[in-house]
Image (cartoon, rainbow, N blue to C red; front, side, top):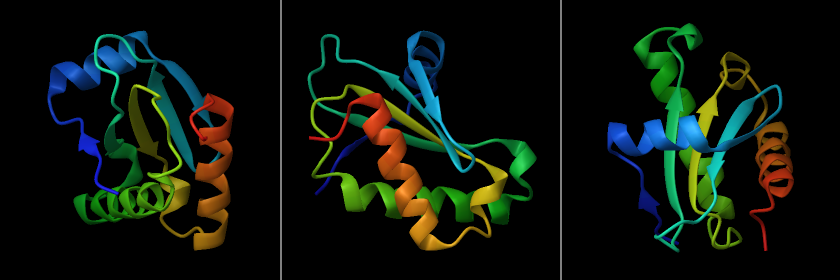
Length: 111
């Protein structure tokens, strides 16, 4: 499924400022429940502490691939931002899949 991406800095700022936070050892999810826009928009980011640009890009690619597996199951959750942690770099794929499912469930975003 195609999903709408959050791209503007102002949109990221609103979700970080007013959204709720859910997380575990691999990732953090910021959720701003629906306001005027009923569709789900998604953003992916990392912190500089993850490492070099190559490592940060790898974490973001992994986040996008993980979310694409669950995109059809996410229903009207508003704006989502996934923040990858340093531990994602070397984590096994099956642990990351369990992690993203757990965090989405905590946030009440899975159907």
